[in-house]
Amino acid sequence: CHIGSIEIGKQADLICVDLAALETQPLHHVLSQLIYSAGRHQVTDVWIAGKPKLVQRELIDMDTAALVANARQWRERIRTVRA
Image (cartoon, one colour):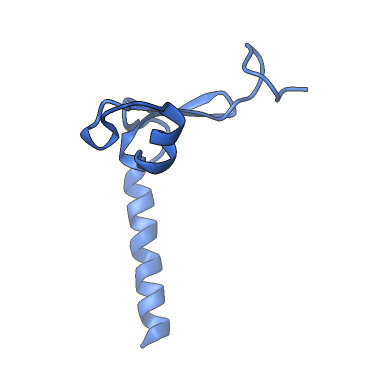
């Protein structure tokens, strides 16, 4: 089985969250801060199935220009349907 624990060779989805931001201060209870105060802008790193996807707040294996172009195409399709 390749899930269930964090070990070399296993798949894992993990995130790192920067808890030094003003909105998470003062830090008394980490879990409470993550649930009630932290937001997506504080996520610094992401691993999906053990592979890095976001490193120091930068997407590393996605074509962001293509994502933006795709979003704009969908915007135009939605506008056409609504018209």
